[in-house]
Length: 432
Image (cartoon, rainbow, N blue to C red; front, side, top):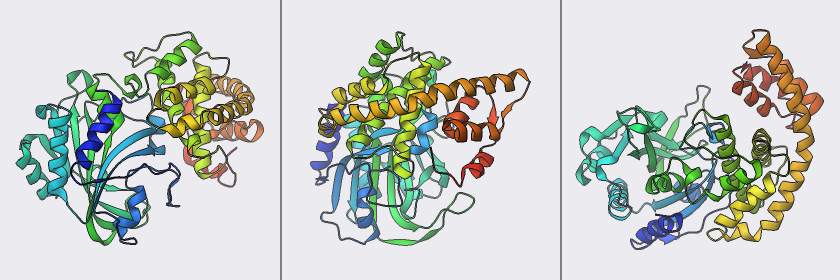
């Protein structure tokens, strides 16, 4: 099943069940506590908090999302993307877990034809009710696993609505990892859909990384997210999103530019990683630019600049000497423009801005890469296992080479970097 049919199947299912179809919000979120939109519920946060009375009791959407926390995972797992489309259904005090679980199971098995025998469920450790409901729809107890807050208690990552969640995973088979369910191997048992039972309000993040639950929301609610990339990967029988119809034309464009083949099956090939990073980042870059975000030195603007610079670096690693981003983002626009017209409307702007940013950064990248390669080679030849923080700072201050790229290159070479010390050295500075 191709992505247009996946989208329409999902939306038709929920609109037929009384959900209002709501357009995607911008990647520049209305919530100032977020850098970018990272979930379908972002635009509904005031409704869940009770600050705004809902215009309708249930909704469905396909939301554009960017997850900055996943940038470093691209190319190293089969399941992560920086940009993705989140299919969601929402209830604002209307229905709760019984209906949400019933809808999810019916849609996955009855409309997307996923085998019930390959579905696994995780629930929050003390959520007996969700486990009972999943058993009632036909999931055997041995395929329902209880996990702690790190896996099955959801929040936006900032103060706001939160609650326990129940996730649906799909068993991709022994070729993808160990048996034992999602608690054992999240590559084999890939999470497709997260059902969040909104009922609480969280506070600020604490020093240890957790957060306090401050109390109950005015009304319970449902917030779900089904990743289009992951579902397309399963339904189309391919290894990762890069091989689905959502992204397939882009690595083909990179192959032409680089004069070499993309080999998705070779997990040890560093060129494969560069193919996947460039493909993934080009999609995120095109959508961020189309939503009016521009590369800059702080906040959301730096998220975009970081993606642009990483993409250019991986293009150069593949041996592409000429322009990288203009032709690669153009392939994204051509492929996804029919589903997202804002990409087509912004095509010329995307070409102009990626050209300008690449020309500006290319001189820095070439000069800094030579110096960095020399520094890494000296450390390795000297038997060292780390790259001094001072090297990172010198490349930054004297040559404008971004610290995150220096750290990434060091890790790829097998060297550690004193990251906290680097952050303390850079704290008075803006990003270059």
